[in-house]
Image 1: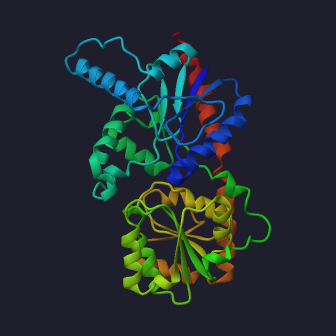
Image 2: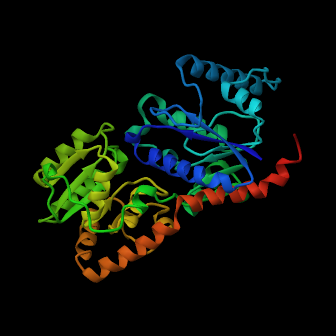
Image 3: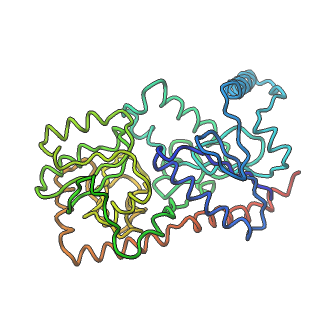
Length: 387
């Protein structure tokens, strides 16, 4: 089959969504030569140029044109009238390329009249709609309209684990046979950065061991407050916070001052991959308090880099992490602090590091892409039934 693989080329400062897409793209580039399928790579809107990829126009005019076509289609559907023969740039492109199937490999999709796979990173807007990042300017409504448009018609919905599958099946009444469960892949930079002695930390950070690491954008759902409250119960520990401000940085800084831990908290902002590796390799533990699941990338990064992980027990965490991480009830600072103290046991620490490395080596991008390729092989006889 001729397959269009569409990636959303977001900026590195966007965090996990960027890392996820870049990791899968790298693995697909390596795997496509050995596949019997031909791939045409597309890049949706983003800040960086991606060589060898067709760039989907994202100018204001093109976006309005696409939206107008969608609105006209919706009107025709409601009045049970045939749709107007108007097509978006993407639809015209895949028709010209002779595309048999589209794989929307990132958190992005468009209308198309061929079979397609859609990737679901999470549907937390339905499980926890009260968070402020889901409110401004209709973010909740946009997400719900987007998912409701593409999930019911998708040939397969890619989810990370059984918890994600259950959420999609329950919310959209999708049969389990249309779910493709593929674990989030361990980022390649982490798999390649775990050998040898830990690299030194930049001196200007003023970060001293032992410290906890929490790499997360400053969204409300990341629950930095629980990590700060745990730090207040852990004299002698410091905390490194890595991530871009998404509206909550000032509040987190204020909470650190209220708890008396501001002098032990380092706000490092956005840092490069070499610095991220150094932070993981030297940390006492990853303290990951995010209230969103069903899977997250930082625990896999920690696993690959030999850093024990302490993770909030959101739905899906057990599926992703198994017994390789210490899990604590969501929002329970005392339990998080207790887990940090448990990791002072060298034997437990060594055991978790080894378990984590095994999980990281299993949840690879190669395995993720292989799961998609296996589905393409399975679906090809069906797709051959029409031109």
